Image (cartoon, rainbow, N blue to C red):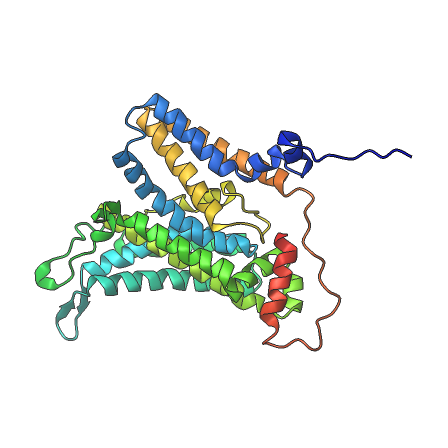
Length: 377
């Protein structure tokens, strides 16, 4: 009886026989490939596009979207949505602007001027408070995330308008005699030639990546977003996780608001309008699932760069503002369609019939990690 010896395939045939799928590669890396195409196209159309100075300038614009996107990523991974981030951007800037104008104490006849770091911390605390209210409404009172954050969008914007009467706080540079200078460093200063906003973006991206990939809380976010019921039965405090992700989203929005106010050296109560849509778009373009449980920091950053570089490129080559809206809208719709294709047919693991009677607080991280592995595959 003759036998045929099977020789291992070589070249492209072995690559594809091992399960390599070029369509899957293009689908998963669509944000990266889209960014490369954008850079190539606009570099060909304008000699000023692909220059060091312009790239740094565009990256400074992207930083605001990326910071917002990182906060939105936490919420979307948890299966929620936050429509209030744009208004939080405006309110946090107004809080910073009001503090830079000085705080009057009529009883003592004094007017105090907080240092710039106190101003920044209080602005961030404002964003955290807005996020906390969102989290409580959604987790404790079971209000749908879309409804709760949509309501807060109007409430927060209204508060910002009431504080200023619809006016703008100008000239936030501060005065050395009052000890409150330095606010504009977030917008104008550079660290080793890189805009401060870009440095902040990189630092926050590293922190977000560590949080999601190296901590128990990050596993909880993925697990509760992929299958909330299963996560709850495995011992994960899903309500606390929800509150925390909305607080993180609020803080990220406040950071973006402070950066914008610093760049403009003025605080406008209408700042950040429609930014919530841009943040969601960055997350979706980066490959995250709007159903929760799937998404990465790297993808969100790429999504923000796609939006920012596309927007600035259209401005540089002189495309009409109306056409810019059409192009950006088309990109978002295409990203959602590709997400639907990517995640089609993928289901979250079924919830267990009953919680383990021997589970303990100490065992929760391992259980959460197991749930996460099942969800994100």
